[in-house]
Image (tube, rainbow, N blue to C red; front, top):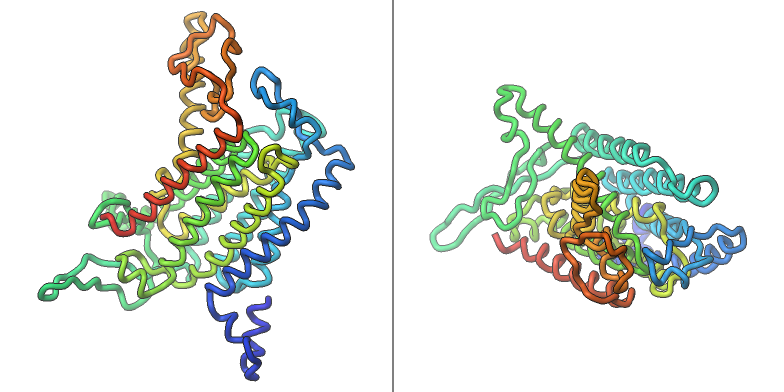
Length: 421
């Protein structure tokens, strides 16, 4: 809204109005504003939630040895994130931009799904919303995002091509006109483009349509996978918020270089007109996460709940798809991936043990972050654990910071992929 106001005022020569044309200015303003909103709104939100008794269900001491410190802590803190992100995005973003609209819609949709889950946990059943309903909601969002990117005339790219040698230098050529494309980026590969349409070349003259269908299916899978992985990571004070802030900041860097014609040309990546608005939205989200950490760092005063974790995962997934970097997700979201894999392995091994009448476990607990806070002798003696590490119980704050460090390293490697091909 303010963007359009100051663009109008700029026509009358109002001093400073031109600043609102710069992405860097609007993005940093969005970050600061969202940080202020999350700090201010968070305090009142926590007091209000405590007043109505909207508290997280305490975890069993056998699972969380630090759970005694979390009794009476309110949940649904994801509302703080959503409010502190949407307000700056509406004020500072270009609301006619297709990518900004997709991010706002994704935030609200997944926020509502998570809110429903948290409300049911708090008022009706500790199991919350049935998993199938959450999966269906995520799938609907993925399908809508994929179909919008397919059908919208505003969602276009300018593809990079193979560098051509001119004497002793290399010149990267780029298509003159923006086109619809099913191309995505493969990390660490010199010819770093993968076209979904080429994968479906066996469909003959229908390969382009088949490629888009594959793209929509991949988008749906990415949204579901990342959203659930982020949800699994939300189990310790500050864990998910810190990891997500690092990941989203990295995506903001990738979105910025993808929206800058000269930088995209230099890095030999796809130039995506209009994706600069993603930078404004992502900076707002980073600011809200940092502000949320003020209250969520150990010992937490509020939990984000599924309202926050599902929303964060969706924002990460949708951004990666929009900038055609979805194949970087396993690297950038390495922690989320490990959380998901640990749960899958734990479930499979447990089922195999049950068939033999024994209690098998792959890790001491899953998701993987829980295995680091199991005290010696806490597991039943008849449990057979394949990976019985570590020996002791780590402090929750130490586990959280070490997971942040892993995410920082993986984020750095993700950015390195821009030049290491």
